[in-house]
Image (cartoon, rainbow, N blue to C red; front, side, top):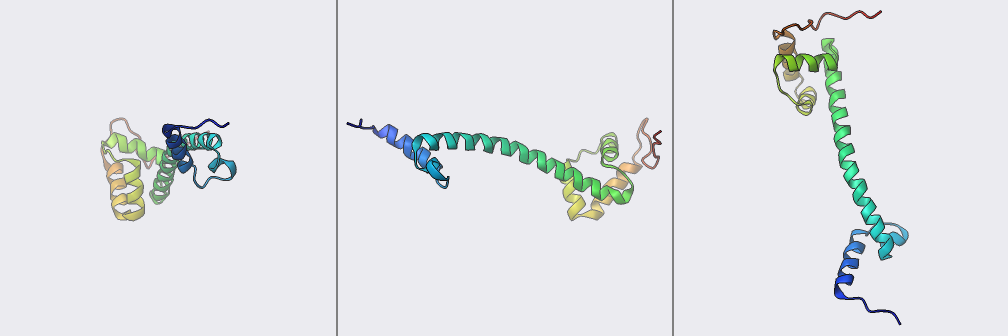
Length: 130
């Protein structure tokens, strides 16, 4: 004879099976398989949020670097000059300006290039490699 399950167990099972809706095969029908699938889905979601931040930062850097092309300046050089000039702008904001407001971005680049820096190499000077 099958053992009767209490209200708490039913509630827990119902909750897990509700979260597993849309999964394929036994993963949305059987409690044990559904529980495992839901736990793994949570782990993947957590990791995915970290990866999304990484991907967005990479996208911002690419957009900034592309916008700096017409100024004959690389991204790494620009960030170095930006820090030395004292402007505190995030990559997200810089990328947004580069795409949506190119004139404002150009003004920022000019300001960074013209700002006085101690011991800094001018941006127009190219480093020769052997």
